[in-house]
Length: 369
Image (cartoon, rainbow, N blue to C red):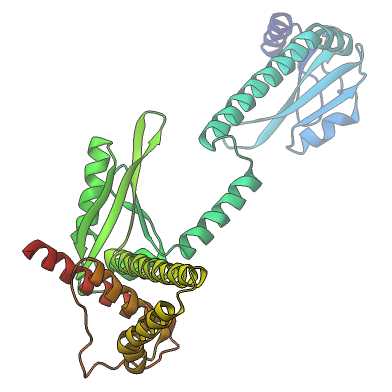
């Protein structure tokens, strides 16, 4: 105790402890602030777990005031327990320290809460900016709508990121691009347009491209995030379909023109008949009606006999009248024969082809004249 007691007292004073006690394995004190009780047993059952080799913390009352007592075992070099060290802090001092640090704890908690709130607000604001201000449910709905739209489009759609890597391709684009011997999109001129738009940031409209034997019409535009180009997207379709639509439209225009010409002609004839009736020139009226009927039988009747389709027949009648107006004669070959057809698409295609051929012939004849 002559060595242990001074060390224990020094530790007690330096750390503001109530006591620092060292005991042997029988609980006999080797040190104590009151030197008169050195050599006597330690008071309290809370030392027993530590005598068994376990650390222990307890609140108890010994020789001195009530204290928070901490026990730890002491081992020698052979890991054999040879004693116990117990230190005590007065409960009154613990209460004082708790009261003194209470505001520090409160301020620390408030500061931590403030930092968390600011961090959460910054994170939410950043996510809102990245997600364009959309809520998760809105993002899910828009994604489903986009997928449905891409699958329903007849036009092909291909998108790339800033590195030129394909990030989106819809089924129509797959059918067009991969419906041939080459199954690598990198070999198509379409990717060259996407790379060009990525580099220049300028859109490309109505460019014709050849791919797998098809002639495509493509539109390629950059995808921007504020002022930065973050990708490019191209939409395209087979020009053959567009050409067919234009031909059908041209044929329908010719057909409408023919109907308009025929309508004007019959209106003129009705006006002539009405005038002759008002003038009571019945002989002239009879002659005019017979002449008109003869012309009808010669032209229209022959057409109706050979052309069974009313639409085609009416179209040709209009074209015959148009040829007459331009000073030419349009006749049907004797072997001409067109049966009636209930397929409107086939009739439309035939009207388109005939209209283009007749108009080209009339234009050529006008150029020679």
